[in-house]
Image (tube, rainbow, N blue to C red; front, side, top):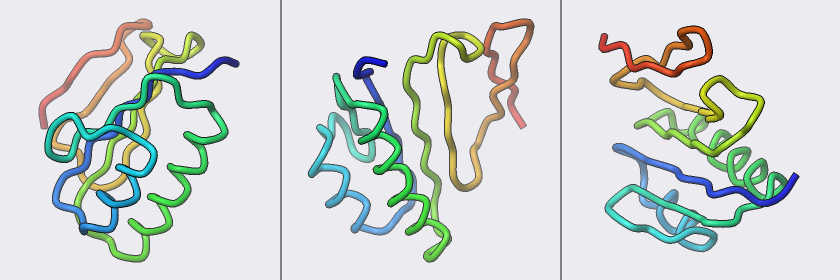
Length: 99
């Protein structure tokens, strides 16, 4: 699989995440990081590091998204922490369900 645009959004997390993420991605707004061509291997490693930290520190929320043709709506979503909205699959279309 080729490299994909990847976006990560953080909310209420420790400063260490910012330092780590800005070493591999561009911070386009506070807590919003993007990489136009991140390989699956790099994306997996970035997520592993963030998940390890999040489970140890347990604060805030992190969402990572990238295009994946086999996923509903062609969008893969990974999340840690409490999301303010729920994403649901409605016959292959992703919708936001407010809690």
